[in-house]
Amino acid sequence: MKIVLLGGGSLYFEYVMAEIACTPELAGAEIVLYDVDEKRMDLMRRVGLQIEAKAKAGLDIKATTSLAKALDGANFAVASIGVHGPHHSWHKLDSETVAKFGIIHTTGDTVGPSGISQGLRIIPIFIDIAKKMEKYCPGAILLNHSNPMAAICRAVWKYTSIHTIGYCHGAIGNIHFFARIMGVPFSELDYVIAGINHCSWLMGLSHKGKDAMPMLKKALDKHGHEPHQTFSTEVFKMTGMYPLGGDRHVIEFFPHSRMYSRTKKIPYGLQWRADMIAGNQLKKEINKGPDDIHLKASGKKDVWLPKANETTPESMGAQLRSLAFGHNKVHLVSTPNRNAVPNLPDWAMIELKAVISKGGARSIYAGELPAQAARWTLAQVYANELIVDAAVEQSREKAVMALACDPMIRDFHEAGKVLDAMVKAQGDRLKNFRAAKAK
Image 1 (tube, helix red, strand yellow):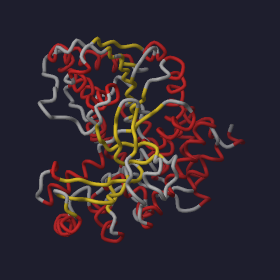
Image 2 (cartoon, helix red, strand yellow):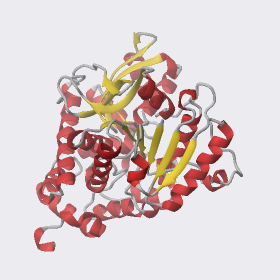
Image 3 (spheres, rainbow, N blue to C red):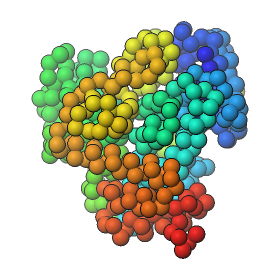
């Protein structure tokens, strides 16, 4: 089996390689790291070698800067690619640029001007990868960990023949929060979730087969003002639907994000994204990796290996085993709707439970989203469609339309001005979206 790790320098891949190494069915696999940053990639390759030395799984770990060589004959590709720039400087640039308009990002990787900028820059990269997969490994499955999750996955499904599945730990983090405040084990809860990644909706919650929503409401009355859940609880109390993904993500899907226009004293205990980057918090949060990764690469500190029944939220080892050998696994992923939520388009890329089995993901019926949740989800489905088409077609007109549809933009006149400011700040990275007179 050949597994390609795209964006191979990402610290996320320490966990992926460790789970592969501890999944017996994947023993002896060939793992190929691919990245344009050879130095970062080599660091993770050496971490992988330490994992193999400890696990003794017979993994053949390689690295290359040739995408064609990496993909040739692959069975699976796992992507953790970013367009944040060195030390997240490009991401910080977007946050700082739009702050001049009073648009204060608390995340900026899915919606809002920064999320759209990221989509316009990263979607062409994924389309290029998927087109090369069609050539070098047409039957391979792409497992995506990059943002904007829904837009990337939709682009690959819409414009190529490659089966892709999106993986994110955010919504499951909310279920762990519910279990804690309700005082029950996480393993005893079952749930129904549907919506856009980073703002999906809790449609049902049960504990040992019984409706647990009344128990959750009581727990939220007592604990709903905890960090990262305050705004989400406010939405729940207004609509009866809990939005999943954490406050810093969720609030950007709503006009409430424009309640504040300064970078300090943001409501709900949130923090400006540029400040998070400057404070080095983002590196730890996004990569989930330790600062001492160099010690692990050199063998001076132990690499992580999962203990019995221990997995990361994305559980990549189990995902790959299911996809390769048909060991059915139910998991929360981003995948085409296919009538799982009848009042959303069949093609919509939504986050919900799916059966992961040999050959791909099969969405599980969730039922209709109530109107108060469908209103926000459907709007983002079509906003994503504009982002996808703008990125693939390199269309300024559709990029402006996407911004005009975004909840963080106040009026149509602002949309073009904000795009122009981001294009100017990002330079050649968004050069095709310059106004005609600016080109």
